[in-house]
Length: 301
Image (cartoon, rainbow, N blue to C red):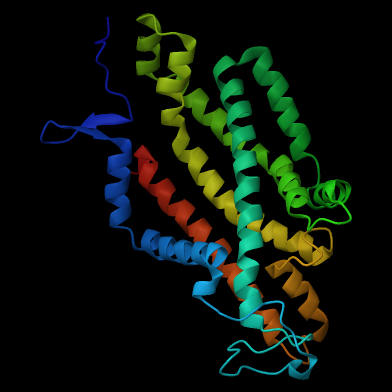
């Protein structure tokens, strides 16, 4: 019979004989990864812009004067002014919050759904797997843009800013990739020797699922969510650009891009800067996801 003191992927001794976790190994790799540090710094700056915008600008994003319409960069407005005479830099900084809020909340929602469906399908298999897999296939068959336009339009009220409508829409439409990755990881981990040994030693299904299978299935899942966060931020901007996302007095990069496109030939700076910030944010989260994947994947060691 196998040794009850089994060492799983999540725990292995180092050369000195001390126990070393997968997270410890991953952190050791991440500390040596320049891409991780660049992306992490960008993400920290983006989060500071979202939740502490006053650190970056003292200007009011809602203070507009038509006399400043389409003016270029000045000492008080380094990105210039838009077609309403609003400070582009201030609106770009304050627009970070709505984009990050929608991206984070929708990704958390998609993560919870993907975790529940993927873990259940992969562990129980059989009918449960068949039903949940077909449900996932149905959701994958819904054209994303069409589904987002319909759902967001139906959920959005006439007086709100559309944040919750867009969040729910993206959460409902984007959990499928996380669920499929979790299902595949669970199926792979479930066949490992330490899981079979735990089952032979009398471990309960819940202990096997949450103590052994889930922790060793999380690496790819975390990577998918990190990349999905950047994708959802871009999706929010797309919906706002199309007029079915954030609205009213909300300030977001998508709204800024949509408003500035008609005046791009007259003044390009109100269009360029929100686009640059949006692209940098999406790239930062994707780079961070790639770095985490490389660190947590034991096959790459």
